[in-house]
Image 1: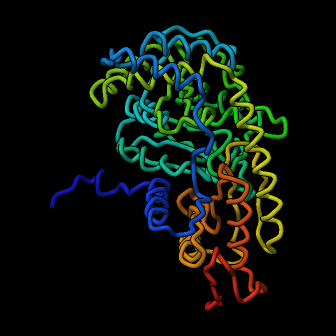
Image 2 (image 1 turned 30 degrees about the vertical axis):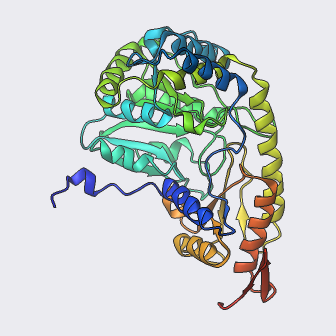
Length: 405
């Protein structure tokens, strides 16, 4: 069978595969705990549901404009004014079927084969393959000092004449770190100086802890919007726990948004008009929902960190945002794929191997589930990897015996 070079070079999403595995095991009645999940367990906002239901009840479910409805764009414009203090026009906005599609059509509008795209490591699992789908070359940047915080020097050393785009995801998936305002300012100025596009993946920017502030890139842009190569991506999936609604957006200069709209029109047409209505309801509705979710996640994080610290040799950088921690288990097993499989096979705990995010030896552990799942999940992990653990463990009525070293 003949498969394209691009198609043969793209693997399946590790995180989506994990969700499928969880669903299969759960359906079989297995006592599985999902600590790899990327979606909050909260219900979608009531305002989102009622707004969408109103449209459904009307029966007028038609095609949406390719770049989003006027009402959706107005909600995005208000959002951009509220959280970025930036006034934009409808021509600066595109609504897409999820933030991931917004990123994808932006890349397709920008990149040519052999162009290079820089992004910070550890990184969102899909970035490398999304870049490859455009025929471009992914260039992950690691901090020379071994932390999760690359410096502007680390970035600059990876820039070549082929560099077309830099991606910043802050707070970062999978580490939960928030890059400093100084670093964001330096990145913005570097991109303007060299004429490089800068894509800010801000999907988690309201889910932050400990009074940390997320830098606003518009504060450092010297060029006017229409001459700027800054692209800001966001969506409703994370902050409103609306992962299944698949509504995201991009804000950029009018020329780029027009090209992105043309591409999206041939891919999927406009995002579902019903789901846009739901997103509008959430964005225009009572915002205390987001704060409630943020507080829940902050508490969950504190519990997770407390339990992880009981495992000798495990290293964890306290997440400043998102709902992920990127935990270093290399003292027990430097092969994250093997370790993740061991935890699934022995105690039915799902984690994501760090190698998928460019961080071998680590596991991404999510804290967006229940406190019970977090505490029991970590206790199971500790039982598997800690040689000082008791020989037996009960999961429900099932007795497990350590039969490995």
